[in-house]
Structures are given as C-alpha cells and as structure tokens.
Image 1 (cartoon, helix red, strand yellow):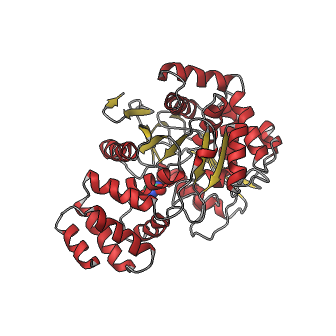
Image 2 (cartoon, rainbow, N blue to C red):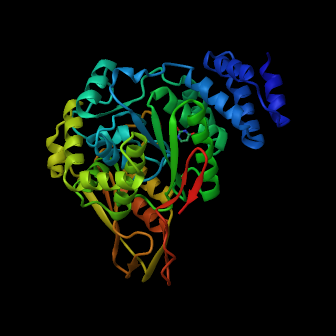
Image 3 (cartoon, helix red, strand yellow):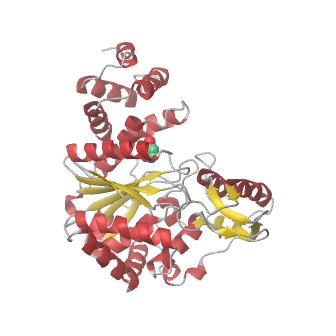
Length: 440
Ligand code: URA
C-alpha cells in the first residue's frame, strides 16, 4: 500500500477500507508515514468527510493503537462521562461523586487543559497532595471502595490520537466532525467503561459553535459507541456562556464543592443533575426522571460531597480542603472589572474568557508551561443580567500584578452590553440516543 494512493482516494471523496485505515494508523504511529503525508490526508478528510463505517473503523484502529484498559477488576457497571470541552466546565467534579454515591462506579481517565478549555486533571491537582498518576491495582481498589477514582491517561493509551491531535492542532484541522468523533471516542473506548454519557457542547466557547454541527457530532459519537458494544447517549448543552461563575483550577474546585453542598450556580447545578440522571439511568438505576430526583437528593443531603472527600483522601489529597474550601491558597492580586455602560449582557465571548484565564496563569500557552492553581476569574454578571455603569462584571485573580491589565481589557471586550434584555437561552438543547434525537 502507498500513502500517496490513499490520499488520492480520499481527495476524490472515496471511502477508505478497514485494511487501508489499519495500515495508515499503524504506519503513522510507527513513524513510517511522515507528518506531511498525514497532514495532507487530514485536510482531505476535512473537506471530503468520512462515511459512518469509515469513522467507526478509524476510531477502533486508533483505540487499538496502544493500551486498552480492562476494568473487569472493578465490580458492577462502570459509566463514564465525557465533555467535548469548554470554559468553566467543572461538571466531572460534581457528577462523578454524585453518581458514585448512588452506586454506579466511575473509573475515569481525564485530560488536561487544551487551548482555551480547562481540564479535570489540572483542577484536581490544585488539591494539595492529590495524585493523578497511580498504579492500576490502586486505581481499581479506590473505585471498588469509594465508587470513584479519576486519573490521567496512561502513557501508552491511544498514541495514534496523541500524534494526530498534535498534527491537527498545527494544520487547522481540529474542527472536523469525523476527526473530533474518532479522537474522543478512541480514548473513551480505550478507557474501558460499559457506558458513556457524552456532554457535547455548543456555542461560542465550544469546538462546535453551531447547534446542528453539535448534533451531527453527537450522532457520530453515539453511533461509534453503540457499534463498539457500549451503552452510549449524548446531551447537547450550552457553551455559549461559561458554565457557572469560576474559571481557573482551584476556583473551579471550590465552586464544585459549593455545588455539592446545594449552593452552586443554577446553570451548573442543573446541567450536573441532568448528566447525572443519564449516567444513573445507564447504570440501571431507573427511569431518567427518577434518577434526576435521586441525584438531587444526594446533592442536598451531602452524600456527593462526602464521596468527593473520600476520593480525594484515597488519592493522596487532603480532604480538609473539600470540607473547608477556604483553605485553598488565594491569589495575591485581584482586580474587579467594571461595566462601562448601562444595559443588559447580550453576549459573552466564552472562548475569550478561557483565553483570559490562560493569560492570568490558569492554563498553558505551551505544553511545558506550569499552571498557577490559584489564578483565574469569577464572572459576576452573566448572559441576560442587567448592569449599570460601574457594576463589577468579573473579578480577576493572578500571582503577578502585571498580568491583570491585559486580562482586564480582554474580559471587557468579551462582554457585549445591549439596551434590551436578550431572549432566554436553553441549558440543554437535545438528547441524542441510538435511534432518536429529542430536542428540548
Ligand atoms: N477533544 C478531544 O479529545 N479531541 C478533539 O478532537 C476535540 C476535543
């Protein structure tokens, strides 16, 4: 086989066979197919797309390119959740403990921040002592004992995605449905859970900005999950506005703790309850409405919070930080950003809010950059809120005073203030299952 011929075939819009995809993925991981040829293939896929069978084949070959987790050492049904990435998305820290407290096992492998979006592993590492790289046997023991553990991906999981993602990042081929679907689902399949609830984000802070594109992405991912023999469904949720108020690692852990105490922001609480309900349903705990009520009860009576504290302790972290979040170190410098006119918040450029958090030190501009766990921002005004000139719209936190100036200008430019209240926005737009799309 020659890579030249496969590129030519895809350029003409023809479908690649399973054997061709296997040869291509294997050759690329082994370094036999050079980056420039794979880059040409990625661009051909970007413009010509892939058929459903091709996407499933690509995903399975990518998943099998490295270690595949065998979770059979963990008792019961294991259900995973995956978000396609967003700003202020701390849902895993709330949902994982809630679902585990109600008897569905969560053996989760999470990622670090990517571009303007945050990552669960960085957030958890802001808890002093918390270990995200732990041996398999200990990971299994913690899940069996506490119901949940969250670790980073092992070194040799889905190497095909690591190489492909890095190449997509520099060849403007990230926002392609077949490429995103295969990237995410290859990691989910390799992570080994029986069921997967996908949280597909839509809006200005998401990779997919348009609702119909997000639905198309969700349909592809659900089809792949089902074809691979897993239970799988997706909710399409709003990422046109940052989720909750906090953006930044320890700030988000604190907001997740408040949410598990029943004091969280409404949007975050509602999305967490809906995703939890779908995970519990998938884990065999009953109808979705009944599961929603169960999740709400476990949130209000503190069972979710106690499970989070137990997981933190089991993974070497100090659970006192969960029970008394005021212990988290505060950033030495903060700045209130104030509205420059009267009106209503009609739009927030969510990706720009993510960039503000990176400027403040909460994310990485380069892979090797260190993270400042206390850095970030808290939004005080959100979409639809009325504001008066001089009102605080957000508070910035940083360890160096000079970072605040640029971040404050950018945060102001992320807000659009109009004279009339904008229409209400939905939090959850649709549910995608094997055979249905239900729009809300
Ligand atoms: N997250 C991933 O893991 N891969 C993508 O392609 C996009 C988001």
